[in-house]
Structure formats: structure tokens, C-alpha cells
Image 1 (tube, rainbow, N blue to C red):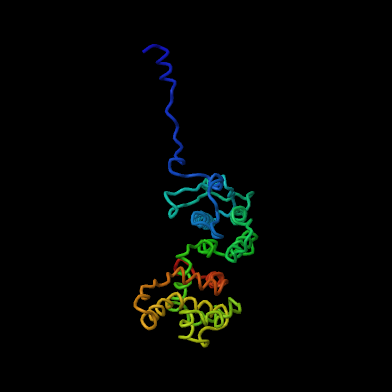
Image 2 (tube, rainbow, N blue to C red; image 1 turned 30 degrees about the vertical axis):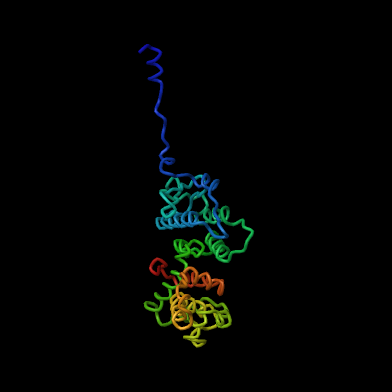
Length: 291
């Protein structure tokens, strides 16, 4: 081999490998360029997991007395092998409080508004979520357990939403004090037309008629109790109708999925999810003990 060839060979270098690219990691600002945050007026599962993991990271920092620092999109890494395991975390990992920086709660509020806030449609859960992040950022919610934001309805999947309502009902019914219904009534003061909303709707009427107005009050508590029972019982009344009223060729009709039942309930009671979440927070219940 001549000298020229040797120089050429010794001068070549192996291509550098970006480990983050190899592992499918990107900074959030790069992620925002290609991934939409909304689909059919709902936050996509990827962004739900990004926000939930950031809330978890902020909560962990606060538990160590680190409440101030920066949380800009170029300082946040996003990655995971698939949507179910998608996570986000701040870079670099803070080891101490930065007294000259804004609070992480304020930074998080700015971040979610940048990503979610500018919308042309009305969304009760989103407006409620932004109200809470703003209150936390302003210091009005200084005692608020920031980690509970991970279970806000806007960040839950379609399977988790009915689970939140039904599992809370079971938890309170079995482990709550005898006064929990009065607590709900006092903490969540909202008038709701329960009877006139559900009567006349196939199968949903049957759920109401089993207990009647003495159980389902015309308020947020009544809507919550009715919804929990409907999640459990609607398909039972459909099965009964299969037996009694339908022809043999119609008995193959599919039952409603829990998600379909819940979609009907939310159309009945648009504020129900917000009310249930507010009760959990005001009551100081650890949501991960309920779900």
C-alpha cells in the first residue's frame, strides 16, 4: 500500500452514532414538528403520556424541595419503544433548586398552553385542566398535590374514564365513611336534571327506575351515582330484552361496550367527569389507590 493510500485510510473515521436517534428519542421541540397533539378534539395518547410523565417528574422534584427550573421544549427529551411506554423527562436532570428560575408549575402551565391552549373548539375537560394548571402556576393551589394532575380526565384513555367513575364509586361504597355522599353533595354543588335526561332512553331508563328519585337526586351526586350504576347494569337490561322481546334472529345483537355506555353518559352529563375529579382532589383521596 502506498503512502497516499495509508494516509487516506488513517484519516477516515467511523460515522458517529447518535444514541438518542438510535433509541427513538427526540427533544420535545422536534417532536412538536411532526406529531399533532389533537385528534377529533381529543388529546392524542402520545401527548397524554408526555404530560403525565412530566407531571410525575415535577412531583418527584417537588418532593426533594426542587420547585424552580426551566421546562422549555428543547430541554425536554421524549422517547419510548411504543405509545404505551412513551415518556418525557427534563434535561439536564435538576439536582438543586434554581432560585432565579420560574417555578416548574408555571413552566408546565406555559408548556401546556403552548401545545393545547390555542383551540377553536370548546372542551370542558380541557378548559378545566388549563384552569387548574393556571391556579397551580399562580400559587393559589400551593397545597395541591401536583401528582393528581396525572389522572385528570383530559389525560385518561377511553378505557380509563369509566374506570375512574366506577372504581371511585366502589371505593367509596366499600371503604368510604358513611358521610361520603353528604361530602360530595356539599363539595360539588351543581344542579343536574337526572330523571328527565335518562327516562325514555332504552335500557338507561331501566337503571333509573330500579332505584328511583329517592336515590338519584337532581344534582351532581345523583348524576355520579346513576352513571356508576349504568356502567354496571345497562348490559344486564339489554340481555333481558334479548330474552323477552327479540326474535331469535335478533338475539345476536351485540351488547354495548363500556366505552359506548360511557359516551352516552357523558352526553347526558357533560360535567360529570370534572365533578368526580374535583371531588377526589377536594377530598384528598390518592387517585392511584382508587384506580
